Length: 220
Figure 1 (tube, rainbow, N blue to C red):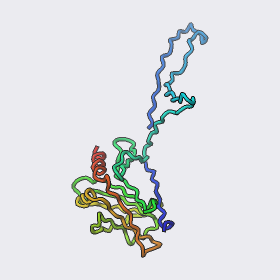
Figure 2 (figure 1 turned 45 degrees about the vertical axis):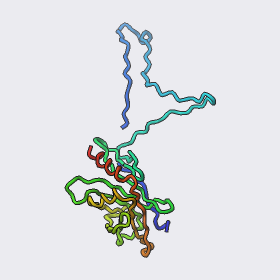
Figure 3 (figure 1 turned 90 degrees about the vertical axis):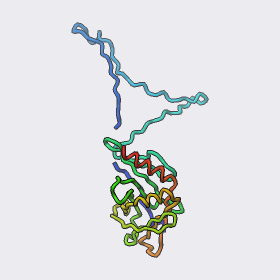
Figure 4 (figure 1 turned 30 degrees about the vertical axis):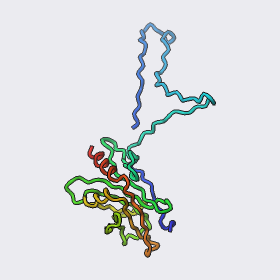
């Protein structure tokens, strides 16, 4: 079953500021020759001195700040079992989504869900992108239930090399269920075993704080 459910998980979606020290050059007159001109050395930014362990006289290194490139995803903050995953934008605020990687009982990555609030005025209060393995039986779609409530079925939208994607919407009442609940379940059917179900837990620990922060972050 594990071989049937191997799942992709990689997402690389879509600077570095440098400062130059100015150097004052000694004034020269036509009478001066190169030999008479005071020697000039390029100005340098002093590097941070590595820490030295006095007992062993070994370098302990210095921290390096890694820049996040435009188009690169990064985890900005975590809320329980959810992460606020953002995309570095070329300008303006970075758009973010509430993210959770879904694993089976053995800890294998199987699916992922990214959720985000929608602007007021639409029937759906939140949108979500769910990615399932390629070998999912698409005609069976996927179902989601919160704390044993009546499940709802959602179709897949498309498949690519990464997996099969379902783009779904949740009403305000369903978002409230997520906020008040403890656990949701996602059900998939493998194409190689259509008589079996794969049920994955979606932890709701930290969902409320993460959801509110996502809305506030994207509104900035």
